[in-house]
Image (cartoon, rainbow, N blue to C red; front, side):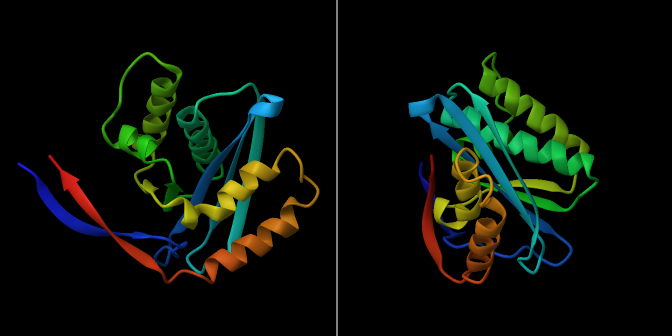
Length: 179
């Protein structure tokens, strides 16, 4: 039996409701220099830039591991800063599905998901959501820029963030089919 319905996924960045923040997560993969980078950007309910961070590490990891590491770093930092009421957005549907279904196993990825779920259990006002890559521009720009644009990151981020926050009207209807 196939159940089908339609739900809406934003194609452009959407402001959170008043009193909430949105944190967009991204990872970059640089095989030519054997590095993985991550970035996240926190904005308030008006779309204003609040905070961001970037990291990089030697070695390549899988896309799922990279996106999970980016999310874990953002969760740890915002928890440490005492920030709550945050919607974390990633364009990795597999990461979101693994978090929602308490994915288990003995891999590095499952270990990361377990650590993410432990933080989420302690922070009831944190949510993780899937978004389209088009709505996650600022996080991907940060993740890619960390290795080469460290001096220009702040001004570039402000420009991309403002542009993305002012362009939040287009949405797509996506069929949802489950078996």
